Amino acid sequence: MAIGFFDSGIGGLTVMADAMRKLPTHDYIYIADRLHVPYGTKPKDEVKAFIIETTDLIVQAGIDALVVACNTATSIAVAELRERYSIPVIGMEPAVKPAVEMNRETGRRVLVFATPLTLQQPKYYALVSRVDEKNIVDSLPLPELVHFCESLQFDKEIMSDYFREKLAPYDLSRYGIVVLGCTHYSYYKNILRDLLPPHIGIIDGNAGTVRRLQSMLYRMGIAEGSGSGNVRLMCSGNDPVYLEKIDKALQIIRESEDLVSVGL
Ligand code: DGL
Image (cartoon, rainbow, N blue to C red; front, side, top):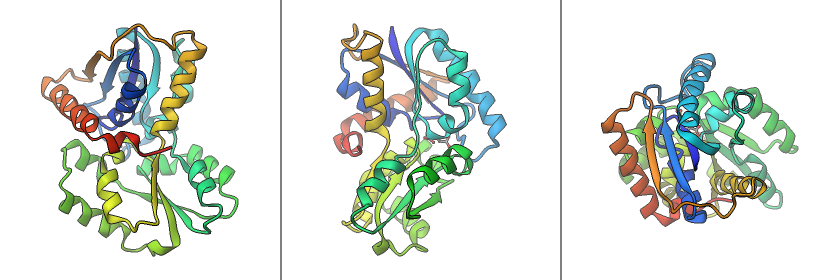
């Protein structure tokens, strides 16, 4: 069987590409909820129903484990998904904990980028209050960024202008690290790297998620895998044009080694 990856759109490919590099002897199925992307600007209950409809499709396709390669979906539905399916479900959350730990010595602040929906969830508040003893974490919703990404807008000038405007209220000399708390945002690592002052690190939760997947596969006794990196692409509505877009985005991410390898 295969490992399943789910996201609202093409964001989760940044996680799957990392898994494919590290676990080449497995096969993969990716599903995007093309009918309802973006999730991060919609009401929680609506999004919860979309998530379940879409993950039902990928589970029915036959997978050994499901990676919810979406911070927003994890924050609102991971508990339901774990109850609903008999296979393991691996979720992801903004890498706030490692970011705070890395900045303990520097005295600088942590800036978390995520969707509005993720940042509104009790799960996010709980995470921050658990790890942020010194009150150094600030959060910035980027509601437009998923739209840019879904339109494959990776133009350096256009996107740098967007980030500059969003970051204008912040004194960046006070920050030591930016956390990319949405899988779509990882496409912009290189643009952000060139834009942010060099003392600011950038992390996402991708590598940590793949590590948790790896240890889950080990516990399941299938760490070695029986595949060869085959990928099947699926989307809600089964739209061939969107499937082509997923394919193109996967190529972009796989060709850019930096995009998959930055992170913790
Ligand atoms: N890629 C998703 C995440 O990690 C959410 C994108 C959306 O708003 O649909 O949060």
